[in-house]
Length: 105
Image (tube, rainbow, N blue to C red; front, side):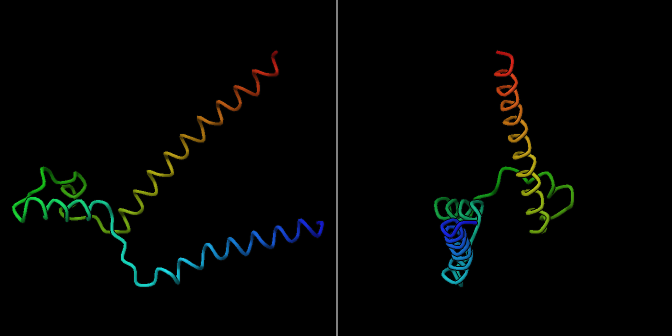
């Protein structure tokens, strides 16, 4: 590896480490909430305490209570993984179609 390339790699590694470490210290004590929480707070501010949801989520009805946070995270990650898999498959098909289409000309 040439000296210039080595410096570039080291510099990029330092930047990557800083991107991971700086927010950890800068956001100490910060609270993060989901959009569902923010939405329900706004509805309570606008309509008061009399607001009742229109329906209960299907899974909450099936198990008789709220899903644990770990299960919600698992389902969200699973949904994300399936979506990314579909997008990657479609993009790969288009790439291969274009690649083989150019070979025929």
